[in-house]
Amino acid sequence: MKISRKNISLAMALTMSSLSADTISDAFEDAKVSGEWRTFYIDRDRSGKIGDTQQDTNGLATGGHLKLETAPINGLSLGAGLYTTNPLSDNGKEREPSLFDDNKDGFTVLGEAYLKYLTDSGNSLTVGSMKINTPLAGADDVRMLPNFFRGALFVTPHIPDSTFMVGHFTDFMAGSFSNVYWGPKDTMNTDGSPTWKGLLVLSGGYGLNNDSGRFINMGKYAVNKETDGVTAVGFINNSVENLKVQAWDYVAYDILNALYLQADYKLKLNDSISSFISAQYINEMSIGDELGGEVESMFVGVKGGVKTQGVTLSGAFSTTGSSDDKLGAILAPWGGVPAFNQGMVSRHMFFEDTTAFKIVGSYDLNKHLQKNGSVTLYYASYDVGDKNNIQPKGWTATETGFDITCNPAVVKNLKVRFRGNFPTEFIETPDGKDLDWAEYRFIVSYKF
Image 1 (cartoon, rainbow, N blue to C red):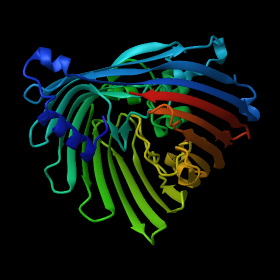
Image 2: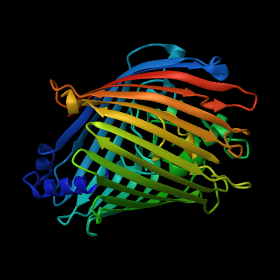
Image 3: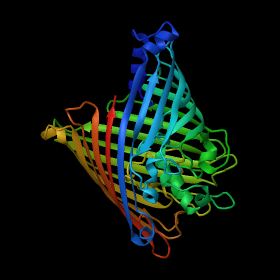
Image 4: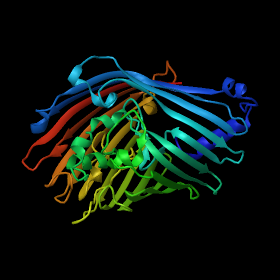
């Protein structure tokens, strides 16, 4: 469920329209059915002194989801979404883990199962398992199956030009992307603290107790210890023309409190050129029993660019602080990685004592070629300082890549995508060993 005023307005229109049901039978007869078919191929060829000792991986999967949401009865509706991924190739140890479950097998889950109440004035309350997309907790739908959350979410549009939401989530189900990371044996020391691999996982959007395809306690997933879950409060405001501001606070009980701020401003320079600038800020502090360690971290990022004649050019820069006696990395265990300068795979900008930048150029094929699609090229660099917690020495990791999308006019809602990423020194060890790779992805999807 994407949280926005547009979605709220659409839900209000559906409630007040002829889709409103009088009986349970009518609710199912007038139900809205939607879904997506997705086929995903990925190939990763590892290199470098570490990569040469690792298994290259590739995989081909097909699946997607089918979702049903009943028409509301007096504002009350039911929703359910079935999600599946299935291998199309039998390549044994070489099978790419990010398309499947922990054992590199296909799986099917009931990711969404919720009860939703929507008032005539636009307030909504959703209870059950759902998809959410917020800055530091989200679906992260970049492979076959996304992440899901179990809890309750209240949204209201009644503040002028704003949306306010508050939710509490007790359980988390990791999607297939989480399987590129390690499990508890590799991510935690015997005292329960995260290893350097664990810190890479936590800064990359996932938890120490990586277990995809089933709901587990939010704290158990993040740091392998039961907690009372996470309460999130968000406020989005558009009252100033061309300016959007948002503020989020996440209370991860007995782990940390995370504050996220973002501002986006657009300015039209003339009839053919427009510009944009954005800023973001994250502050994290450990709370309660400090089950994730003693955290005191800060992240600042900026982005700016111009658009003209179908071409967009942008640049982004970020920096994190460091602490001599506390953990200075940004921890994001539940799929939320909102940084402007993350790569297709590299999420090093959240490491402690790190400065990073990214430059991006893209071209809208529809502008001159009358083709529905785009071509994007990017370069990102991450200068990881000596005080980082990932490895005991500093190094510079880089990533280049491309992203080509096409929406063929002959089939509405069909999308074809070809992507590639080429990191260098993704990880560098104190003895000079590094990890590089070349990865290609081909995705075909159809939404209905």
